[in-house]
Structure formats: C-alpha cells, structure tokens
Image (tube, rainbow, N blue to C red; front, side, top):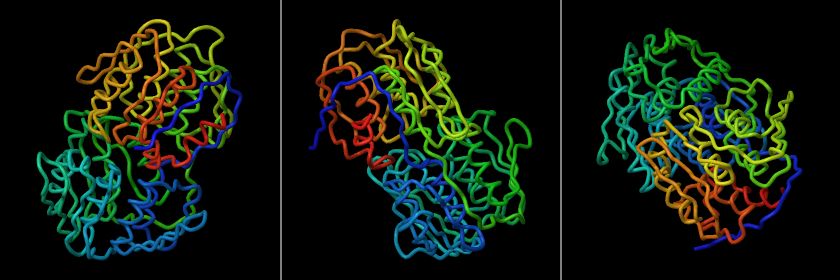
Amino acid sequence: MDVLSIRPRGPLDARVRVPGSKSLTNRALPVAALARGRSQIAGALDSDDTEAMRDCLAELGVRIDARTDPWLVEGRGGLLDAPQRTLDARASGTTARFITAIAALGPGPSRIDGTARMRERPIVDLTRALAQLGAEVEIEGRDGCPPVRVNGGGLAGGGAVVDASRSSQFVTAVLLAAPFAERDVCLSLKDGVIASRPYVELTLRVMRDFGAEVGWQDESTLRVGAGHPYQSRHYAVEPDASSAAYPFSAAAIAGGRVRVLGIPRDSIQADLGLLDVLARMGCRVERGEDYAELRAPTGRLRGIDVDMNATPDAALALAAVALFADGPTLIRNVVQLRHHETDRLSALEAELRRLGARAQAGPDSLRIEPAALHGATIHTYDDHRMAMAFALVGLRVPGVVIEDPACVAKTWPDYFAALERL
C-alpha cells in the first residue's frame, strides 16, 4: 500500500484555490441532464464522485462533454433511455441516491449498485418515499442497502413522508426528480427531523436556478410544482466549502493565515459554517466578495462544545484542530457520520488515539481531550476526508504518515500537492 509522509511547517501565509463544489456539481449535473436544451456547467469538480455521476447519466442517454470547462450537458427534457447495464455509483453516496430517484423517470428498469461499502449504506428510507410517489422500487441488497432495482415508468406525485434523520440526500434525491411527476409533490419530513438541513437549501437553490418551482410549505414540508420542468442555462459551480475546510484548518493548526479564493460572500454551502466554529476557538475570520480568510489565534486555541449536525463533513477537519486546543472539544449531533465511506466516528476515535490523543466516540458524538502527541501511520479506510483531515496533524507533529493517499481522488485529486504548496 502506498503511503505519504507529511512535512511539518508553519506559520502559513497562503492563497489557495480549491476545486469546484462536489455538492453543487452532483446536483447541477442531473438537473441539467433533465432540462430541455444544452447547459454549460462552469467550474465543475472533476473527481471520482462526479465521474460516477456522469457515467450513470450517460447510461441513461445523456450526452456530457467534460473535456473542457465549461462542461456541456445535452438535456433530455425529462425523457431518458433505459440503461443496458447496471448503473455503477462506485463509492459515491450522492450518485447512488440521486440516480435511484432519477431512474424512476426512465422508460424501463434500471439497477443501481456500487462498491462493497456502498452495499452497507442504507437506502431504504429513499425507496420508501419513492414508492409513495408511485415508483416501483426493489432493494436487492441486505439490510435496506443497494443494489436497487427501479422499474421506471415515471412518478405519479402526490404526498410522501421521508425519514431524513440519517441523511438529507434522501430528500434531495426525491426533489431532483419531482418536477417531472404527473402532479405536485408534497414531501414531509418524518417527525420534522432532517440531518444536514443546509444541504437541502443548496438543492432548492440549484433547482430554482434551473427554473423549478420548489420551496418549503412549512417547517417540515416541501412542495414541488408539476409542470415546471428544468430549463437549460449556464451554471457556475462555486469552489467547494467542504474542501476549503482543510486549508482553513491548516492555518488554525500551523499558525499564520490562509485565504481561499473564489468563495462568494453570499454562499450558502453548509461547511462554511466551520469558519464560525473556528472563530469560537479563537481564530479570526475575514469574508470578502470573493474570498474567505482565516487567521490563527495569537494565543492558544480553545476547546469547545459544538453541534455539527448542519456541517458534518467539516467535523473531521475540526477533530484535527481540536488536538491543539486548550481543553476538551465535544462534537455533537453527528450520527450521520456513521453512514459515510466508513463509520467516521469510530474511525476518528481509533486514529486520534493512534496519535496519542484521548478520544471517545458516542452514538452521535466525539469527545477529544488533547494530550502529548506523537507521529503514527494513519489508516484512512478508503475515506478521502480521513486522509485529508489527519494530514493536517502532520503540519505540527513530526512522523505523521498517511496510508493510501490516493483515496483523496474522490473529491480533490490534487489535495496533497496543494497542501505541500501552503
């Protein structure tokens, strides 16, 4: 297995451009695919996850030219082809969930599958909601997990209840397909609960940008109007806030400052919420019209108690920062971290302890107590965010070695080159 040693350094003084947002790219692609006419998607993320989405859409008859920027997407106006082979979502959760819903609009059956880990990530909450809207869906895997067979034929629409306590992606998946239902779709959240609500707001913005009629009917019900299909357009993808969490956290750990370019002041990407969390720990934040900058505190970082339900992906970077704080840090309300590329709460606990820290994972939380740290070889569990987060520790602690560094290709193929340039 390949490994990579991290070089300690600091303080930093850097300007960084991060890749385009995976969340926005993997929403804009299926929306443009369902739109009528040719769309251009500028600044899109080219990574394993977005390639999986492109390949699945191509199997459904969508022509996508990703050789240049902007990408060109020939929309099908909601009329898809029946795929000739299994739609391979690989390790991409957004692809598996979103394509399952979109395949319901096709003229015939589709089968969606992925990696061994994807076959352990539940999708039954999505399939139940789709069934309520008239889709014929069968789970072929164990314990409510892929593979999934979708018979196609379209969505009738109407009302449905979705359990979104484990993932907001189930809500997004239904929303993306809903404009092509025969009648309006009213999607209610079971018990009014949703994990990572800001990601649904991101979905709503993308859908409206492409002409859909969608919004909140009340605090726990979303409505999508029938007869308002997507329209083609030029769409610009913002830099990825989830990726930006790592250079921001690098400055908090190594000292100095890092400015991430291209992030608009009015961005609603969820993981920009990490800036407020780091400010609570003593860092200084500056927002401009097209950048965000973080400066390390002049003194020590402070440990905090923080609810990260809205920004769970950023919790991994925060865990790395917490190692260098005065006092413990408690990251709460992140049960969804147990259902990603790996059980991230258990993985974080194990690898933090490997470095000498005191860490304790609960059912939906992680407590970190700083201690004397030492170098270690970090297992990454084929999880890009584990690799990215623990590499940050190596900016301060000699001897940190990252196993399987290539796993970052899922969302940021050039991550380690960018980290070296800081």
